[in-house]
Amino acid sequence: MGKYIQQTDMDAYRFYLASMEKSLATIEKYLRDINGFCSFAGGRTITKELVIAYKEKLIARYAVASVNSMLAAINGFLSFAGYGCCRVRQVRTQRRAYCHANTQLTKSEYLRLVDAAAKTGDERLNLILQSICATGMRVSELAFLTVDALWAGRAEVCLKGKTRTVLIPGKLQKRLKQYIKRHKIESGPIFVTANGKAVNRSNIWKAMKRLCAAANVEPGKVYPHNLRRLFARTFYHIKKDIAKLADVLGHSRIETTRIYIMETGEEHVRIVSKLGLVA
Image (cartoon, rainbow, N blue to C red; front, side, top):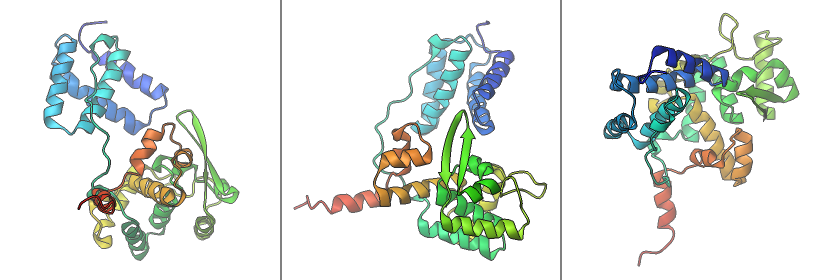
């Protein structure tokens, strides 16, 4: 092993990530972060001091969450490539009690998106939005929403070595059965492209963005994962059971689920204003 990062190290790490069943999007993100560090290193010997210097550069340019995400990718690679002694600590930060309203998709905005998809005649997109938001599925899990799953009333999702069951609400089942009947879909995934392949994240993301103007929703709020977050907040509002919600979402850590149900700053202010602690 040389004292600087070589292309063979990167190639081996890509293969390792794939063997760990990381998604293509995750692999590309990790490698982008690692390449950023490699550009900074510029062929210099890898030392902890060099990694710390890069960390300081990141802190000066990015939000803490972004810095920690990049450091996690770099630390993982350093351990894999034999530079474990050069790993650095992530930036410590206090957990936020609330999130910004301009990042959170509301139920009324979601319904406007669904309505806009219907009005533009995009029945597939209309039902994709409802399928994700009504079940809490990840967009990568839509391929498991098959004709067989629809008739069973549940989808058995197997990804990254884990299996979970996603229940399909009765009203959604009815609409999807009407959809597959009209489009003569007899087997396989319900949502497919013109060439018969299951729709992917990119297909859905671009289609959702096209709805923003008609639905009068800020584009920054409109992406598939925000539908899953809306499901989580709505479920928690009714059930008030974070452990159950974690199971439903397929989270292994409740700390992850806490992020999904975080209130906006406006809601936080409304709650503390009701405490009556100002004379």
